[in-house]
Amino acid sequence: MQVTPSGQPPIVQPRAATDLIDGKVNLLGLSRDELKDALREFGVPEKQLRMRTSQLWHCVYHRGATDFAEMTTISKDMRAKLEKHFIVKRPEIVEAQYSEDGTRKYLIRFADGNEAEAVYIPEEDRGTLCISSQIGCTLNCKFCHTGTMNLVRNLTAAEIVAQMMIARDDLDEWQDPTKGRQVTNIVMMGMGEPLYNFDNVKKALDIIMDEEGIQLSRRRITLSTSGVVPHMERAGREIGVNLAVSLHSPRNDVRSEIMPINKKYDLEQVLQACADYPGGSNSRRITFEYAMLKGINDSDADAKELVRLIRKYKLPVKVNLIPFNPWPGVNYECSDENRIKRFSDYIFKEGISAPIRTPRGRDIMAACGQLKSASEKKSKGQIFREDAAAKEAAN
Ligand code: SAH
Ligand code: SF4
Image: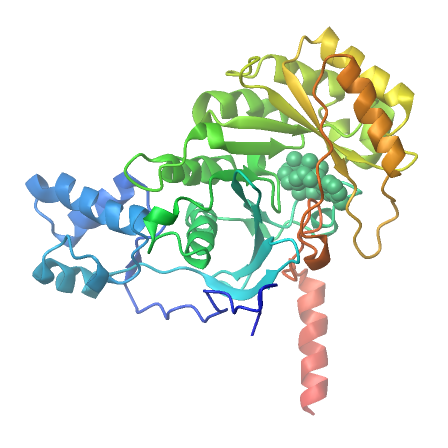
């Protein structure tokens, strides 16, 4: 059993997923239109469809109901019928870890056995949930633990929304709305590159932003990209959330070395896409993320060049300096505290905000860039070798 730093057991214990009963449709993760279609197929008369869809939507997303018996706004008769065809099911929480600093990390196992992590980070004035968009990542940034995994698969919209539902369950947000929201912000900064799973991320965020459901404002959601230039404009136009861009160096040679995607979309292209980002303005600044790597990207010259580029492209940005978070086997070190401070001061003096992010949840490997799950995409060779080993062990 997991225990929180205060000695209390967490509200949600790791638990097994409810068994899917053949033919039952999981309502969690359906968009409003899909829910309506599912109800139509189920036989709800056309003139009741709008009302029934709203009722169910409200129960599933606003109240967090998982059991039809809790949906008391719906008649008993109707509930009994719905229960025969539908289910509202969360994925399994394999492990919930609690950091000394209050950060909570959830290891979530989806129906096919693959796993991803989500992290809740409480602060004085907000609570931020860091959500994963993929199992693994295609991009292999050298300083990122997720980058050591191959991409196993994209998460579905339902699996992305489920991370929010699981955190809200754990924080007991549904039962006691007077407590106020615990998850006030979302960052798409967990495992994976969200713009390489565009449609599912968009669908999930649309569900999360819906005004009759979870109701999280787009201003409280930030999507972080490593710089997938062709999808950045579309993200601004179609999703409309805040944008964060993983910059990490103002030099193409260094950026290409630490972030191989720079060979495809270089700095100039990324910066131009930032300048063109719909909705980027002084009141809604883009965030540049910058992991401080000792001896790699932390010199005075780097700070100077970064400022020059921000000015050149007239970017309304804030630079988030992230002390590098180590993980087993990595070859980089975090810049010294003084170096980070000096880097930050230089940028501030030039009139650009450059706060130093306090690392959170390092003790449970929940900080930026430390997430990883054991899921693997197995090659045919691997599967063959494992089968052979299993046979040998059985003999
Ligand atoms: N794939 C997306 C979002 C997930 S990573 C992206 O790359 O933007 C969230 C942030 O953490 C990114 O800025 C990423 O570059 C940064 N990061 C990755 N590994 C890190 C580490 N070990 N220490 C600090 N920041 C790291
Ligand atoms: Fe993928 Fe982002 Fe990690 Fe790079 S930093 S490997 S894009 S998750």
